Image (cartoon, rainbow, N blue to C red; front, side, top):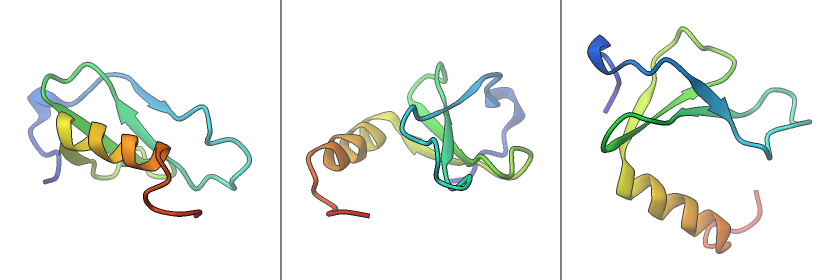
Length: 72
């Protein structure tokens, strides 16, 4: 799903606290949008955002923290 409905465009984006020192290869997420988590490439802030259901994004983050995807 991409974020094309401007009424749902978030005003504030944030990077992970773990994103430092990786040559700009990181994403930003926006908080405060009910039921969804918008995600975008931090190098292209005017570009498209992907939108995930909040429960699916939470499950993904939990999997990353648990090491389910191995070392990257």
